[in-house]
Image 1: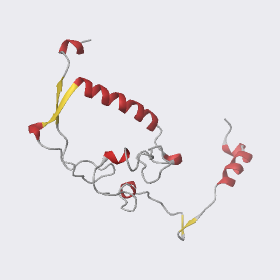
Image 2 (image 1 turned 180 degrees about the vertical axis):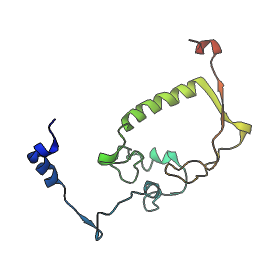
Image 3 (image 1 turned 30 degrees about the vertical axis):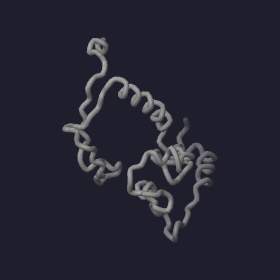
Image 4 (image 1 turned 90 degrees about the vertical axis):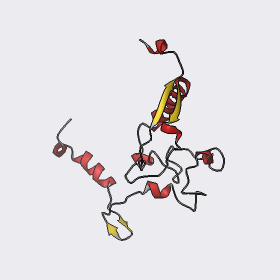
Length: 144
C-alpha cells in the first residue's frame, strides 16, 4: 500500500467523514457508558438490586444481549460490541451442559453462595466462590 502522503483522495475522504461535535457543550469530551448503572435502573428493572435471572424468562423475555436493547448490554453495543458474543452464547450452553452432565456441585461446607459484589470493572464477587465438584462418571471414562 502507498504512503498516506501519496493518497490525498483517500485522506480527504476519511477526513470528510470526521466531524467535531459538541456534546452537552463540551468539545472532545470523553463519554463513559456506565453499564453497571444501566443494568440497575429502577425505571426499567423491578427489584433492580436483586439477582433474578428468571426475569429473562417472563417480564423481560424479549430482551436479547446482542446490543440492540440498551437496557441490557453485557457485551456492549453497536460498533464497540464484543466480537466474541455469538461464540460465547454457543459455547456457554455446551460448556454448562457438559459440567452439569459430568459433575455434582456443592459449596464447601454446604454454605449458601454469597452474592455480595465487590468493586471493579467486571463486578467481581466480594468473596470468592468455592465449589466442590464430584465426578458423576467413572474415572476410566476420563482417560485418554
